Each structure stands twice: as C-alpha cells, then as structure tokens.
Length: 411
Image (cartoon, rainbow, N blue to C red; front, side, top):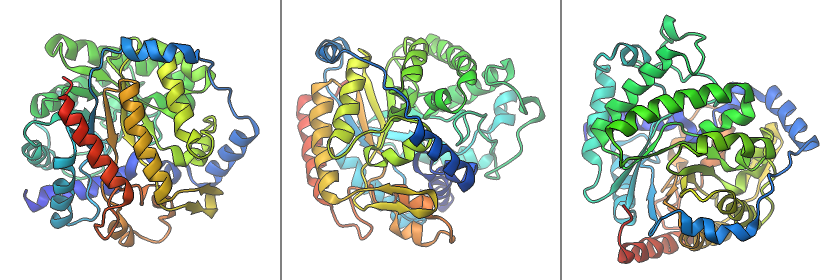
C-alpha cells in the first residue's frame, strides 16, 4: 500500500475513536456528568421478551454458519502497524470488515461528482487489500459521533463545512437522501459487500433524540430500496447499541425499521455498561451476566439474523475519574467472553461477529495529547497486546474460526 493510504487509515482510526468515544469530547464533561446522574436515578425498563421464543427465533433466522472477522484498524500510525494488523486478521477471519465513520464527501455526493483525490486513493487501496475468499462487510455513518445529527463533510481535508444545501437539513430531506444514496452506491460498486450497514450505531437516535427517529427511518427506507433493486442479494441493515435497544421505548420503536432490515446489527461492549448508562441504557449486569443476559434478550426479541457489528472486552480495568466511570476488565473475563461468544453465536445462528480491534493501540495512545483519557475505553480490547503478544483469548478465537471454516462459509 502507498504511504498516503496507510496514514489515512491511521488518521481515520484516531478520528473515529473506536465506536463513538468522541461522544465524550462532543458532549463535554459537564453534560456527561448530568446525563450520568440522570441515568442512575431513572434506569429505563428493559423491554419484556419471552425467553421461550429464542430457540424458534434462532432457527427461523435461516443462518447456517457464522462468519467472524475484525476491522483492519492498526495499533499505530505506521505502515508497519498497518501491515502487521492485516497479517494478524486475514488468516484468522472469514469476514473482512470496512468501517467508515469519519465523515462523508457530501458536496461531491450531492452533485454525483467524482470524489476528492484523497478519498479515491484511500478507497482504491482498501479495495485492493481485501483478501481473496473473504466476504465483505461494509459500514457507513450518515450520522455524526453524537449519533443524531448529520455526519460532517470530508474531502481532501479531513473536516470541511457542510454544503449550504445540507446545513440544518432534516435527515429525510430529499437532498440528503439523494446524496447519501450516491455515496453508498459508489462504495458498493467498489467494495462489493455482501453485508451492508447503512448506519453505524444509527439506532442510537432512539435514545439521543427520539423525535428524529422517523426521519432517519425515511432516509434508510429510501437508500435501502434503491440499493435492493440494484443488488437484491446484498444483506442490508443498520446497527444498534445493544444497551439502548433493550430499553422498553427504544425496543418498541425500533421494530418499524428492523422489519425492513435483513439483519439486526449490534454494537456491544459488555464491560462498558457504565459508559452505556451515561446515555440512559439499562445496566448490563455483572460478570458473565453482562453478556449472557443481553445476548439472550436479543435472540428472544427478534427472529432476524443477528450481526455483532463491533464488540470487544478490555483486558484492563478502565477508570476515568473525571466522568465517574469505573469499568472492570481483565484477561480472564475477555477469555470467558470470547469463549461464550463462539458458543452463543453458533447456538443462536448469528450472521457474523466482528471483534473491533485485533491489537491494543498502546503505541497510538502514547502519541495522543494530554486529556485523552476517554480513549482508554477501547485501548486494551485487542486479542493481541501492545507488544504484539497473544492474549489467552487469541487461541480461543483461532480455534473458533478454524471450526467455522470446517463447517463451510455462510453465504
């Protein structure tokens, strides 16, 4: 790969902040503290499901084998880190994940004009890096890191002002719909995904700004319908934060969109219950219950194929005193989670599971400016540590993927 693409990927990783951590920076500590106190006073009720329906729902999903993969985000901003990360994930996965959460070239997409040179170069290099034989999962974020407003504009510079036509435009504005379809269509033509996520954690609109949910549904409907006409076999959906989805109001309101999805995508970090509760999600629980109970809930909630679009478990306890957050972690808990994840994904007929980071980003973290404590949240979720040594869970992951390969790939 060319050095420009390598640096672009690493900058993407730093800006994306691993699944929404920049929410802290967007909201500010005062607002986070207020939200945290509110969430603790009034934990929402979990939507009631019938546990007895889980087995039937799993069978009705139609999935015969689960795919496993990683996003290719590197642990440092060097070409060596990019290559080593790729070398770790390719032989230990059956799904290749591309996760774009760093803005959209809205101006060019709106005009259906060629994308900026930087984006074209990076996309072309990413397409060339897709390993032969791997099914592709492609995910976009039409929403900003606050998961409720329109994603920022990008181009040859990482951050640009939104085009005047889109400023303050509602999510279902015809211009937004047209631009987002043009963007998605172009990416699909290049990357040829079998699984497409039209909204990374977009389900969190439900808890962040409930009134905008119908507008996001309108955007999703428009883009999905057009792409389905062109690519009828492509599996299309969005992802929800599992913490938020379990809340009674959110679970009910989500049905209208889930009915139009080919799978239910989930973002799930069971050790980070305290972080989820900041935004009003019901607590996950303690120990193995922090993943077993939420995953049992979602299988009883829907018969759609379940897709873990991003997950992980920290091998270190994460304390962020300025936000009052304490999230226990450790290698034993990560190992137990990975072991259960393979068992549950097989039992409940998941479409795929994506472990978000293969390698701890200790080296990248060391280069971050002071005040980056929020970046600790995902720093140590890798199955390989920052010195490139395998953690105990790595062997379990490898064995699970090998067993999946023997059963054959699901298509």
